[in-house]
Length: 481
Ligand code: UDP
Image (cartoon, rainbow, N blue to C red; front, side):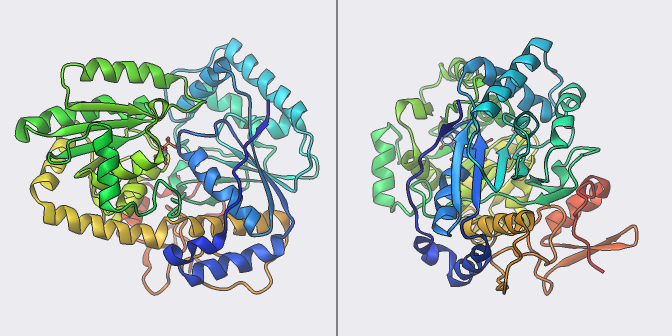
């Protein structure tokens, strides 16, 4: 109960080459007033999935920046995780609610965790719904509490939402990945929009070199003389792995020597993973060119890196998505992506960079075929995708946004904040859809209800104009003019 995760040490200095001087200097300036601040992050799993990925990178860097950051895990038993996956699905809009027994068990486990939380912190960041009730059941103490929601909660299941909503009243602030994810009648006043980012220095994202990457994939049975499409995802129905197999079958009729790799991790807090894995195996049994890999058989960061680098096309056929880190991970390696129009994916493929958004199996197959047949187009899209990730979705930008929030929460105003386009800093104009800092010289504007809003891209502006009210639920939505 409440296990600590030891992430070792990391140095911000290692990010200078990938992220640039301005971003690092901006981070140091932001962190200076926070020196010594005790910050705890709580989530449900140390591996498998985007949240673990982010914390694994962020926590050691916060320590290097002079904060005192810890990472702890709530509970570790499968009945609790079956309940919290039902809560996760409910928050993402699944029709299935919770039973009374599930709810009672949820509260009991969080209460036990609350008793086990003895250390004092200045700030506690609770990730996703699993530990959400912690501040109410523990008591707020002297800490400020932030709920960091990584999933799409824009249209939650009413039963699940009615149970969780009162527990949110104990929070000082909430952070969402996209402006459009804030649920209706959200009870937390301070709402920030902060999209995640990838770690360019992690083994998953470093430059492997093609020779090493090829050796890694050959060793697990991939024929690199033949075309390869791949999806890297938790085995989760929202990621639509069976839709990927259906698209592959359509593609295979046109490209007979095509191979498909489905690479999936089993997260501690996702008991649905094995069911989905078995469904995939059933669907794939008749075709030896469909390869199914998991972290359980040792397909880890280096293999994921090699797949994202060497696949001709990466597919991410999500139906519902939080951010979808795998999209930026693939683009960072210059590989084009064909992906479902869900959650944070359009943001990563905005303005035509990086690949194509699709809404069906047929469209997915058609777009992947287009890229397989036009390697020059694929290469150009991949190159533009990498450049967009460099500008917007690398770890220092995320850290800057988070430090800015901590400063606000802990009322330790930054002395002289260095303005840097690469680091999100307090007071600047932000895009109400993606929360990113907007460069006033390049911003696109739109006026709604007499107020003018600034956007980083036409994708964000179009999304906003399709349903402005949804983006204005965040009370702190940035306005200009
Ligand atoms: N991942 C992995 N191995 C796998 C499948 C996924 O390491 O077999 C990682 C993937 O590289 C990414 C994270 O898990 O870093 C998934 O994050 P994402 O935001 O795409 O989705 P989530 O699982 O959080 O819904």
